[in-house]
Length: 625
Image (cartoon, rainbow, N blue to C red):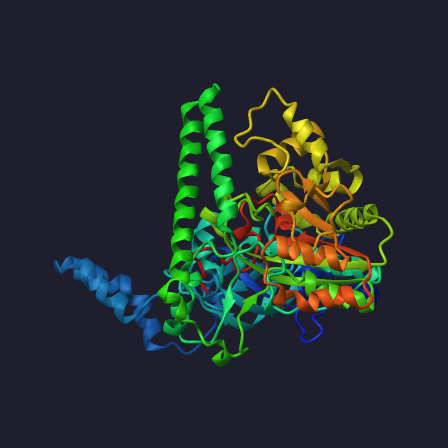
């Protein structure tokens, strides 16, 4: 054993700033930690489960004891049966007297061993730790969630079970006690829905811990890809004066008192800012046509009723917005806020997208990327975590809130629009391969516990080809479908929703799909117009289960065309003067894409709700901590 000691020491990886051994470096070894048997180590973690093994008291023969001093207590204990017999003869209350005697002379606690399964969050597996009751009371160390730091010897398992090694504790360095009655994870296998109310404790569950480790690996893979391809990381502002997409409900940032803010901003309580009344009215006409078509067709009553209800909500939306516009243009419009008294002396918002700001650095540094939170105040379903870019798609206005993490990049001196698609494909393949190679145990766990097809879907991206079709071709293919009746009519100019995209990827092409050259009305103002004047140089990468993961586009480098688009969409030109300056002074052709990080976590873990894929979810009406 001593001759192998140097080799074994090389195998132990200590935490750099403490003497604790991270469990993943033990349990993740090829031998499962067998090579460490006999080594003294320090481990820490939280108790996942426990049980108690009571030891039989050691009985020694009287002759082995030898002469010794005997205390009064020991004499009384040895004579208890004799006293009880006398009490019984004289008719005394045997049980009452026995209780009194036991109270006076309590029985010593029976020795036991606490068998703990602990995890420090570094891996799926847990380590068994044996703690003798002489070191720590079982009532202190056994409750689920207890934090323990112990020093001991790695040994072969003392029980016949699946464990390969265990740690026999010789010192207890720290115990963090748990209030069992109030600790939310004391119950077994809480559903993810209930765990959302305890976001500060839920990473201690195996499922959420695995999801977070996979999420961490995706972050590492992202930064590695861009670093290896010579992209510079640039932090974009979280607070901005610009609506980067020109089509979103945005969060306003202000330090003004609530009452003063309310005088000017009916928009603060208005769910419809950023949506033009003309567009809503056009949508009403379209929905009215859909209702008439459903009534003339063989559609069931539920579909007709749902369409009528949707039309009713849209009509109510138009009425409310129209009333607010009249109110603003009336006598109350004179009550304007004095933003010169605000912190930034102007209206500011949480950023929807960093692409406009990122482009200014691309115009000087070449290839750049950014990675961070983006804020959409749109209400949309957390399962359909990204609202369609189409201005005519109002579905998201009535549902939930979006606050997500995006990866955005730009590469300059673009020669062909197709090159941007290839970059996006390479990026997606790289990070999926990274997950397969670096998260083996976590993928095994989520495959078993959440979705058995997780690995197959990742392999589909890594090894499979991507189908490329234009938006026009996608509409034509969907219109030829006869075996499926879509809830929303497919027609050129309308955005493809989730049922259309999922049918294309899962039923028709059965592979990841790129849809490019979308109608210009469905894309932001700064996307380059194609020569046909009807479509824009943009693409979406659609994958099974989660839909669009990447949305990319070529930026409009022509000053006149960009100015025209700003005017067409009714945007405030003053907000975009700095962006137009990039076209006046050394304009460069560039392209980029936004990668939706949280949906990829769903794709890689098999989860169905984005609130379970983020550390601290924020949604409409929900901000627990």
